[in-house]
Length: 426
Image 1 (cartoon, rainbow, N blue to C red):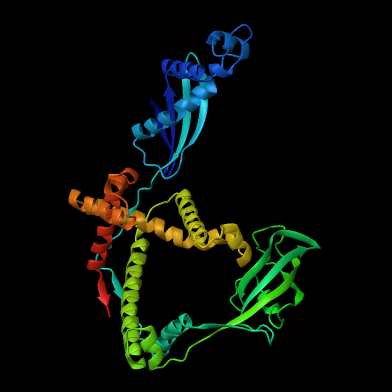
Image 2 (image 1 turned 30 degrees about the vertical axis):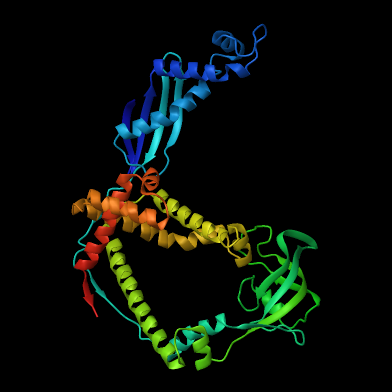
């Protein structure tokens, strides 16, 4: 039960929650029943020792910790609900008192969703710019088609050059001692791609198949692994393979064989059309971004730091998830790019702040303008998610609460309304 609610700072509250002596006693009894079979008392068979005998042997509070842990979750959840608070982070909970006579008292520190003010977001003025498609852009795009038809040519009569694909063994040493994560065999690398730390790929250039050689490089000062940051190291290399991609000639025969067109001119015309459509789509995305940036600029209010940190956490987790689909883990990626996790978080920080502020702004717009989502529209949103993940709608509903999805849909409507009201300057 909620004993008191005190605002200590902006968006920060301290709650005092109590559990009655009777409820605490019930929790202690349940803890005793759950653990008695594992407690041995001389003269009693396992599981048969009375609670009073165990408490006399091990102390009155032998079951209190388990009892408090059992009460914690539900008590805090109900207390926050009774206090009518919307939290943006897990609360900090401290047990202030535990006794048989008075039950349990929790102190709960809560960071709450901020109340913000939103300026006028109707009639925002923005300029739309659609970039022209050049002949060079068309040729570049067709170049990707040529690359897909490229033939791998193995090299055995010259040294490796920038742009070549090589297969190498490598092992790194610091002060003559191998270091973790610095060894691989038959590793494929495109020279000049910048995949490894500066200086590594450049020193493979000029060597031939079968050569074994050393590469001397220095790790960046802000390298993630502190023991390697700024350290000079030696990589022992063995070069196994060199190859390059030979592009086919762009002519009508190639076009007929690889596309639905008959001539190079037809292919170029279609490529230009798609690039122009993409340029229009990109311009619309830039336009929406510019509108939303102005919306963000109209947010007033103190936003808890934890909201930004949580968003950065989400972004790092999403990146780690994407890397896992490529067979990489985040630590390995950071090692080979010379970036630290702190540097990655810093890089995400500005974007995280914008996303948090924009979401708060759009939710405020929904509230102020009574943007509603009907039951039929909500059902359609569930259906879309089910189709996207090839999952039955009823299963989707088990994972996504109706009120959460309804708010997301309302926020989407808010974006559409703000865009529709914007003044577009061509």
